[in-house]
Image (spheres, rainbow, N blue to C red):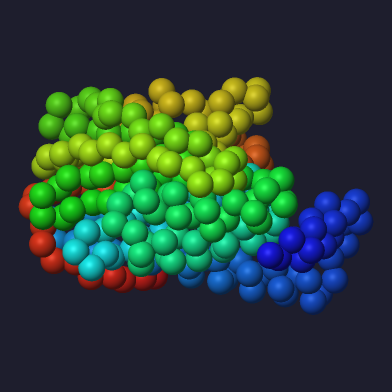
Length: 278
């Protein structure tokens, strides 16, 4: 599925000829606009904040995040990283989004969702010699219980805002999507408290490099989150992005930079979906 088209675009984008005709340039800009709209919706919740942002290393990227409201009122969220960059990775990102939306309609947990996505995407990813890492979580806005599963993706950072420290939650193990068919994923749960914050991210943040080829690393990210944990999610998001830009000093990014931040203020029970105006 889409394999021939994917390979054709790979050949176009990997060519040594840097001249891009106007038609292809328009199509790339259109693809970027579509991708930006798909990554720009987020739920608005009384008593909590949640936002996401994805900054592609090229015109369009392969990182992905999404939110899906379940029939039981829970919010299912996912963040992922497609192997590769540019248009080929963006195409696989769209396939991943479709698989997530479809799986969320028919599954009852993050582990089941990842298993369904693995089954749906395995043949395409195997044919393309690619893979996707994903972290999927269901958040209950009434009980503030977060249930999660991982498909080869890094664990999010759990910040205790009251005590200003990073908490290590139970780790959920699981292989990346595309590695094996009919994969089963482990599931864990954690109870969130007032002023807790969960920072989901892709490795483009901690692996961002400066002119000396030094990496941003987890320590810098953790220090920023702890320093600004009392502020709004929107402010925290901006502080992280600004810190990466200062650190890299204009060095072009090698990988997409993506994050999703969930911050708990109090028990919440009203949810709606809005689209960012950014």
